[in-house]
Image 1 (cartoon, rainbow, N blue to C red):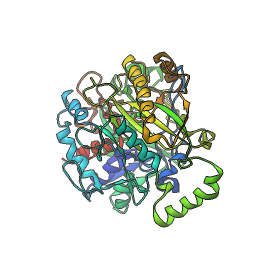
Image 2 (cartoon, helix red, strand yellow):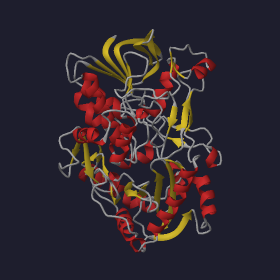
Image 3 (cartoon, rainbow, N blue to C red):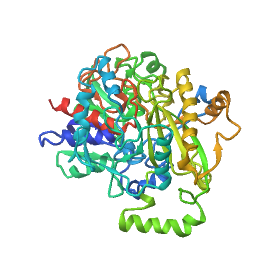
Image 4 (cartoon, rainbow, N blue to C red):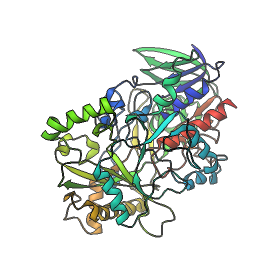
Length: 529
């Protein structure tokens, strides 16, 4: 089978590329996805994220290597494994990042990647329900909406943030986002609206577009330095697809893994696993960045937060089911993390350095332990927006089915750790405001015995985590550790590009889905030109 374009990975970027590259009926496009179709009811229902977090069929369920700064704990990294990728399993928060983030990319030598270049792509990708303005567009493939039925405790977080001195804002997606607000979400009529629904489903009937699910790519094939196709495994059979251009969109973990399995990467690491060297690129798999995250969790005196209780089973659950299936309202439309914002952890910060998410549930260890949610409560996240720690993704062996070795080195840079301590204090201060008086119960953790900076630091070592925004492992640039240039072509090779969050040279100060859509929109323009 021969195609003009083979796209490996049907996540946010892959869905955009499949749509845009197949608009011209002369182009034959093949989209490969290792996971199944996105037809689970838990994808459609926003609060289904609670089940998708532990799914074994639509989630790669990665774990890091032991994290040195976190008492050698392994950290869970959920990643979407279905059409739509992580946009099908995430919390749907629509945030873009600060204009500084993209201008910084351009300052590193990546021409055409400044905020003025990226803003039109954000606008092109969205149908912003509140309406078009300087920063937002309408008529785009993905729907961005207000929450249908935000919980009172989520509104209280915004009010408390204002009482704590932070700005109120109705848009966390202008050029300089700062303040607290309810999040805009990737939803329509109370249903999840991920990349597959927006970009892929409407064009599945194009005769020049082939979409294969359950298709794992073992390696990219080369003739010298020219990519010629891919070897795939599907239904226990191995076959070869030929492509004039190969585009990797597997994300910050799977794209560098596939490059290395294909013989592209650090020479010594490939030799260690007996993989023949096609092209030496020492930066493949390096520069891994993720947002470190910490939680302050409180008990609630009120019974209107999300909790697994007899009341949920007997009363709230049936009402929620009725409201969702007949009115597209109510509890099941919640993305759980309904409110938050971007704030400065200290006055001297030039731009916000902490992102807040408020989960209207007692949350610990990604919700994997459901027993922790048996009581009423709420949880405040603080994540460090532009961490200085850098990690890597390495191969365990030469077997494509083996999980890679993922080491983000969370909080190993002392500045990241200091910012996390400030984040704990910041969330505690918000929770202490008058707006929470009717909800505020005992603090579950850190707990009343954790007060000094050193006690908070030890708490961070015990509980800090990531918030699922890995980037950077195939970074864009022109230095010795860059993997792709500013047209996203892999350095030193022909007919091979990487288009996903792995190309970000530095992590943006926001959730990463919206920016990944914009990256793929820009890439599709460059490829078609």
